Length: 304
Image (tube, rainbow, N blue to C red; front, side, top):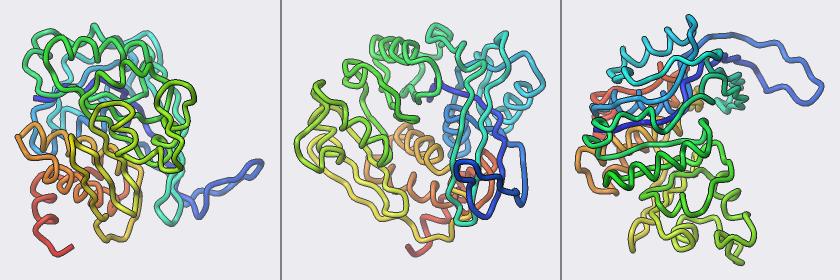
């Protein structure tokens, strides 16, 4: 099974021709309220791909929190260990332009109450993987990594959004997933061993060599590169017409770990995650865009 420790947010999504610039007011073409949060999205993606998943985090004692938990239950996620905090449920404001590109502003709210000791010991003992992102307190992420290592559970960290985290914690992970901007932010840290003099310091290979862990760097429409053990994997993106890219990264992580949990090799897991993320981009929404296992199977069987 998979344990996800991370954020749960209500997403306020505005569809517009172009995102507003500084000092500019833009009329939105449409608005919708979605269930989201990187942790919750990744948990839902893994569950829809057939994995047994437990979500750990915090929501407020409010109707918004009720809705987020209901959405995860509907996706097949165990939410029995999600805490109710004395703070409003976390939220995000998202603009999606006509090209499908998005900009996201997040308010942590109850997510700031998430604690590593909320992860039940029995769930951790059963887990194959612990999945983490960067929308809950960094100290708690570090503590969760330590707990997983002690329990012999593989740790997957999605460094999103890019925030400082001790290098010792990064090196204690098994797999790091970053996009281009997150990889660049990590490589740019000076004087701490994560920076190489080469202009290609943010590549998956350079980051793997600097940190000593497996690294996947997603490249959007250009696919991905992965440095796993002694090998390098490159995959082109699936050709699609993107409608909304908001959930693509979270879908990728969730389905990648679901495939690894089932025993798939890394290359096959990356191929599956790439296909699922592409499918998510063809639908509007966050969790509502995440594909089922059957849909991803069918897409994988179709010509590239």
